[in-house]
Length: 227
Ligand code: DX5
Ligand code: ZN
Image (cartoon, rainbow, N blue to C red; front, side, top):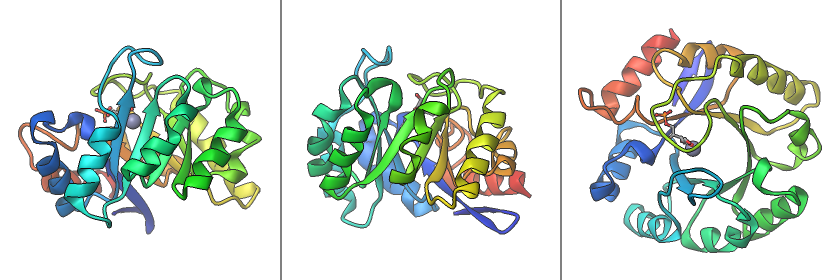
């Protein structure tokens, strides 16, 4: 857990930047280093151009890491409602679906809720915030994409900062409980900006699993950048 002006900020290390040939060990390392939630990027080659991992990986991680590990599954797939129950069964703690991929979002949210998993809704950089205002009172997490989803190591889209401010204000004014999570290009150079804009949770991939630092050292540097 990091903090900014005494406000706690969760870190969700993205396993997309881990070593896929040593996933269990890298996931355990992230938790041991102080990562709060493991961020698992599920891509289908249709909603996004890339293909990554699915339910078997979630199941294997749950088996390896035990019941305490928080497995936060970010579904970048078309028709996510078809896979909600399977991800919950595999051991997902939270399931986030994209508003762009789910035309009957209200129903999908109910479906996730019924499994007992936490509910997240993800929104792309080009999508208007109006698409989440009708359901934001029903979810645990708003996952704001700060790059176009599909790949790690991309550059933070600057316009995102204003958007984060707007969601923060909306949540506070309506006394809602949804957490704001940001994903994409979050690291040493951007963490202070998104923290000041009011996020609760940062997904960090390429600035967490690094060639020249341990995850623990990366976390220390992230906190240093927060002041
Ligand atoms: C991108 C994924 C992200 C990715 C972030 O589509 O949703 O979770 O792993 O990676 P970085 O932190 O390198 O931008
Ligand atoms: Zn993600």
